[in-house]
Length: 361
Image (cartoon, rainbow, N blue to C red; front, top):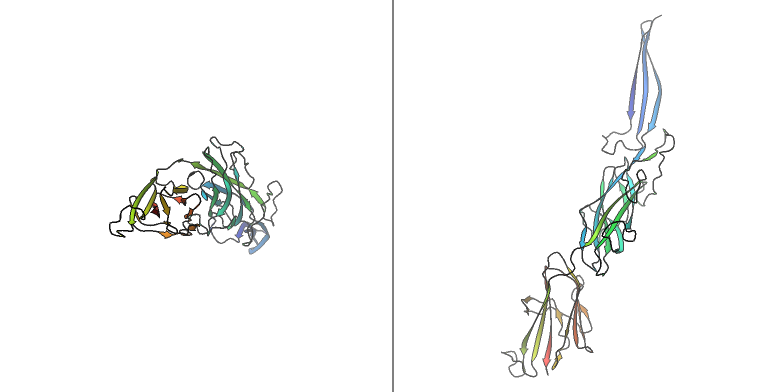
């Protein structure tokens, strides 16, 4: 009897698509069977081994990076935004839990001298990298392998004249995926236990060790800052007066005689591009020998130079708002004999005009 034999092996994997940079998807079954062929007395024979099967484990990794640089802000600004990206370098779909830490109290970064208030972490909902009211998610849900999400840190800058720099660190932690309706629990590493062929073990692969972080822990972090870049703007107020009627000439070439009505026009401008003035309060005392005309306060008219060509929205003396979107308000204080107009945000794009009338006593 004589025989010859040859041994080959055949492998299969359940994944059908080419892996990306994150590698073969976790949970993929890789199976391998050995096959022996041989002859006995000229007759071809074959036999196969059992299948050696294992599951691809989870190589958990992430990258947290700044999107752009520090955000220039003004003192007292609300809703200022820092932008980051979180990339899932894990070979599986994962959730990411998001937290933050501020640096001032720890004295970590040179130049830090204040903390921001009312800090919120919000995930971009539509991929436009711009924070809007439509963005509400507070964690990253079901992010696929090699995919990236933009994350916003939104905060208010305190009205502190000594403020200069506030560093804020975004911290992302890899969590379990698989449930689109809730945030997954943080992953637990199995790196120190023996490999289990039928179980998807978790191995942390992040290596972004640095201040406040350690490698191979499932966390990533990145830091940006709110930076006070401008402490003042070129803000001007131009005031003019126009006699609009008198008891003798009425509306035709009126003169400033007793009983005449005079319209005052105030035009406030911010000439500093890209730096808004906030909480601008205009106040104007009614001059001696005149009487304020009730209900004559208006805001938002058309002005050329310092002259109001038209009245704007008429406000009640007790206080009113020009438009809800603008937030501009105005009122007349009869006790203090004072007109007041408040402008929440004044940019360089559009001046604001206010007018009111008095009668000469």
